[in-house]
Length: 461
Image 1 (cartoon, rainbow, N blue to C red):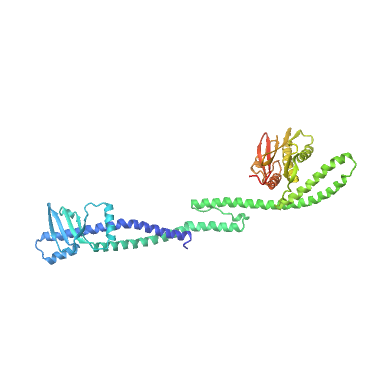
Image 2: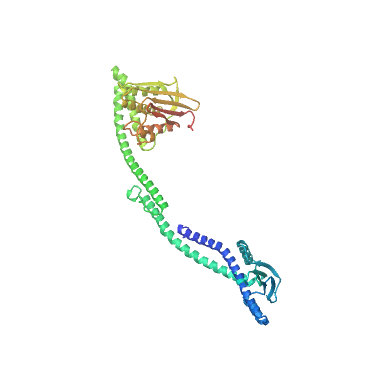
């Protein structure tokens, strides 16, 4: 109860209302004290009028008049003459004098608080203006105990009334919070719990209905989140199904290619010069196809095999890639160039590095051929103290916007028309496995440039 939103509202409301009443209590008690003293002055003036009407009244009647007025002495100033009208013995010396003719608000509040704080019964003199122009001034002497008792009684009544008002207001606010806040919030929570049980079910997505602006905004934000999450889960399910199909196809294709690899082993023994020249290329292509099937199966299991790092000659790998791509380009006006320092070796998995470079060059070749215009693909390399750098530049049309927005994300848009994007995602994963980075340096209408960095020691920061 106390930890709930409505329970805390109930407690806070009670506290705040009581605080407001306490702030009202102080000036209220000060005003009560002022009225009390003015009433004593008025009663004292009335009692003195009886004496002025009849000069001769006995001591018993005078004592009764003073008792009814609640004072010991009454002094009137009329016609500039100060006259002791009524008097009785004062039990103690006068402790203080209070002028009620034109007191300030802070003076009244300070005097009232001092009176409540002071528990001793003291004799005080009170000065005021007579009512109905009954003279120039009236002053009385009185004791403070009855005044303090009346102030305490009045204060208790104020506090009791404040407590009743606080409780009543808190109950009303509790009900209002339950209706206008807690109930809608519980509705949102119930929607969230229902959606969490089956996030793929679009029927469980919340429909905003709150009348409170803030709650309506929260519901709309939740609607957007649930809609995006449901769409993402459906896409994930489709991709999982597609991944399963690809894994099955790759498995069967691997078996077929393995059989083809056995036949190529026999072909290598042929005496035909053309066969002898083409057989190594065919064997290498089939071997890479088998490795690609293995890697695709590993990607479907999210388990890319770790690279077998060794010192490999970069020039040989690049030459092999260019030879294969030059054959694939056929008669198209496409030139290949390389600028690899002689004898440059890098620490990498040769097969995986071949796949990365081949993928990037193949994408560039397909993009240039698709334009129907001449083009050039250039592979360069250099090294510094920290890493080896490989740059692949082409003069193609540049990557489409979808590919730029989702670069290196599988199935999020390929670098070429109709591509799946899996090639760049695998390439980036392979380079990360080496501790390096595959970066898109530039892409526009003049061409595209990728950079591969392979660390010499550890991982690039």
